[in-house]
Every structure is written in C-alpha cells, then in structure tokens.
Image (tube, rainbow, N blue to C red; front, top):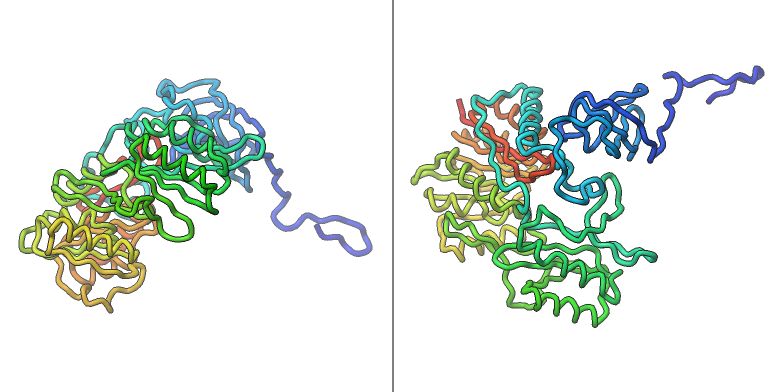
Length: 449
C-alpha cells in the first residue's frame, strides 16, 4: 500500500483488490464441469478455477484444498455427494492418500479415452493432424510395474516410514502392498518393509528401489554407513527372499556380491540386455515389448538399410533393429549407458550396430556418424523432447522417422517442426505405459513428402 503525504489516505495498487488467500485444508463443495488433461475434475468457485483430484464430470464433491495460488486452487475430493454413473470403486486401499495411481475411479476405457483426447488436443494446437490414429497399446491394468522407488523417511515419533509420496506433499503414505507392482515384487514387498522397519540405524537410508528382470533386485541408497548389524539383516533378507542386493552411496550403484549381474529379456528377438540400477529402463515390460514390435513394423526397415537410433539407452530398440537391417547407429547422452549398450551388442553377438556418446540437445553436424545416409530413424527422447535432433534429421533427408514420446506437449512441438521441414505425421497411437495414472506415452510415424 502507498500512503499519500499530508492526507493520510490509503490507495490500492494498480490491478484492484488483492485476491483473498484460500488456506490449505479448507473444504469446499463444488460441482465438477469437465476434466483436465491429467484427469482432475475442473470446477469454478469464487472467481477461481479448482482442479480436483479424484472427481468426475457432473459430480458434486466436497474438496479439501492442497495448494492455492492466485486464481488456481488444487484440491482433493474428500467426499462424493453426487456420484457419476461412470465412477468405479478404487481397487487400492491407499487411493485417497497416495499420490501415485490417481485414476483408479475411472474404467480403463475412460482412462485411454482421456489420454488420447489430451494427446489429440496438444497436436491440434500445434497444427498437426495424423492421417491415422492407430489402436492404443495396452497391458494388464494392475501388476504391471517391474521397477519402483520406495520412499523412506525417519520420524522421531513414528519411527521409519516406508511407502510412497502423498499427493502434493513430501509426506509419506505408509503402505504394506502396492497393486501395480509385478506379482513377484508384490510377494517380496512386505518382507522388505518389515526388514527396513526393524533396522537399528535406518536414518542412514535415503530410499530403496526394487526391480524385476533376470533377477529380483533390491537397491539400498545410503546417506551414511549403516550399523554392522543392519548390513547383516539386509543380507539375510536378500538370501531368504532370493534377492540381488545392491548398494549406492555417493557414486554409482554396485552389487553386494561382485559377480552379480542384472538385466531384462526381449524374448521375441532372443535378446538379454544387461542393466544396472540408475540406468533408464521402461517400467512396463508388456508395453515395452509391444512398443518395440510396433516401432519396427512402422519403420518397416529393409535388409540393406542403415537406421539411426537416437536416445538409444541400453539398446532397447537398437538391438532388435540390428537383427533386421544392414547397420544400426545408436546414440546416447549418458556415457555409462553407451558402454552398457556396447556390451549388450557384444554379449548378444551383434556386430552390425555401433554406439556413440553425444549431447543430443546440441547441433550434431560435428559428429562423423551424423554424416551418413540413413533410410530410417527412431528416437525416444526424455520429456524435454528433441527439437534440435528432429531439425537435423530433416537436413539428413531421412525417409521415415518413428518418434516415441513421454510428453505430448514436446511431441506436438517437434511434430510441427518436422511438418515445417516437409514431413507428414502418417500414424499416431497412445501407449498406456502407466495404467491408473494420467501419464501419456505415444508413438508417431513421420514420412518425408
């Protein structure tokens, strides 16, 4: 506020009155009018837009405020006063607390429809329209995750809390089971929780991770050394539950037993890929295998062709591709994963694939591999997308491009750039990598016109 000299008058700053702050925890009755792209109900009240987790269109709900800023309020549906006929009973007992699987109140068909609609809207805003929408790739809607990070936090009153993060909070929801983990991980999960809670010095644990592949693995991330008896307890757990035990302190993860190896299989192509905690790997094995098969089908590589695989990781696409073409060049930004990809090619006796390290967010013209002639290219970038990369692919005049995306917004941006360079989106499909969540993955095929 400013005060006028000599008149003792107060004046409001430009822009009118300051909006009244809504306190966290306040409850408000709302009528839901539509859904946002991430599945939250949208309501309007007191000149503010409310985004309500756990609500459906046409429902009347009592919502509790999680966060409020300016004209936007984020809330959680505490009570459903008038339910939609489309509402489903959530399968998980932690649904209203855990911030993970936020769409359990929707059917699988509703979830897929929401994801495809959100993707289509992003493309339309960018001026892109695929010639064809292919059927969505689907897996089992439960017990699909082969990898998960489990949160661990010490509380002086409650002891060690083990579980997953609460929605819009750093608080941990203590869980005894997680229904989206693969069955083999669900079986060992309670024993892991029990062991962690019984440790003498659990404050030294930052988090733990579980992974199911060629073996079931448990990674323990340490912020300080454990008490000796705790090392003994965790090793006994690993022996009893037939787990591979891995550690991580300040550097890279390493196995408790030096001879331990970890990986995952691609049976359709008779491949096994080595993997270490910290490496990127798709969490849904069923979708991963369907995704590779669809990518290769859409790319339609010929025996005599050279293909480029960008953001190639461990060789998830590169190695299956190498079984169908003359030559594959895989490029990755993480040096450790480049070395792992080379080892995977060698262990699978594939000699027609080369791997290189490069920052794919920078111009690629200086790299010798980037000057070759490629008939097809495949890319699987992180959420930031691959704007520089797709522009360079256009300069190379690559005939066919398959783009695997984990972010519809950057896919739409990059697709618009490709179309400006003379490509057309021929086909697009949603891949339901994370059922019960609003996360959208997609695949698109571009052809040079």
